[in-house]
Amino acid sequence: MRQVLSDRKAICIFLLPALILFVSVVIIPIGISFYFSLLKWDGIGQGEMVGFANYVKLFTGKTSSFWKAAGNSFLYAAVSMCIQLPFSLLLALILSNGIKLENFYRNVFFIPVIISTVVIGQLWMKIYNNDYGLLNSLLRSLGLESWTRIWLGDKGTVLGATFVPMLWQYVGYHLLLMYGAIKSIPQDLYEAAKIDGASQTRTAVSITIPLMKPMLKVCATFSLIGSLKIFDLIFVLTGGGPSGASEVPATLMYRTIFLKNQYGYGSSIAMFIVLECLVLSWVIQRLFAERAKKGVSL
Image (tube, rainbow, N blue to C red; front, side, top):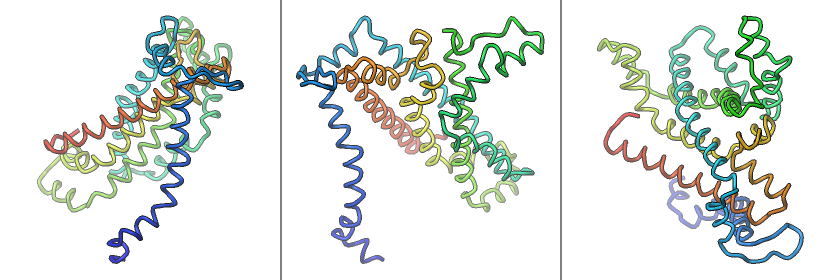
């Protein structure tokens, strides 16, 4: 085994299939999308090279809904990072303490993760339905008729209404990752802390959370990227409506390319999504690295 790991030629041979696959399904499509973003093309005829005109239109167009869509995607990322991850961490800390029916609760929280996002979108559409939806029916039964809304059709409530299914679906995903990280921490550390008289809260803050920083970084990265490129849930729930109130870059890209046949402009939106995911992922990596150097707990 040591001979194989020290042989650079053998390492390259074993990595070659994965490298070919990665280049074929990731690098080449991104390169093609970038090329398309430099064209004025309807997807059928001959494309006209326009350089970075699509990007200029994207960032400076006065009638463009791009900035509204980008702002919504950042809101999704902020909600996911500030609500979903802390809640998942809290649940993981509670479950890892050996409560009764621990495995049952862990599986229950993970169920939404394995359900198709399209199915989840349809489920929450029924919950939010103005006439027979569970939410409005519950409010009416409590005498709160004035609180009922057309949740997915009101500009003031649509964003909040779409936040909830997203948070509900992926809490179990991050919970399971964090739960596994907590369970991998040596029990000797907890026994020593217990002997020293540390409370459960103090133990979690001083031992558990610092030792699971690598997994917290993974969860933060997954949560950020998933929020920035969200598409299917929004498409099923609202399609980006009403009047673009819940639009995100991915739904805007879909409508631009497949409904308006503006392949060049739509590809520039796709490149923006790729770029923002790469840049913000790098920012998260740097933040965790800097805090690790300073020995600061997250």
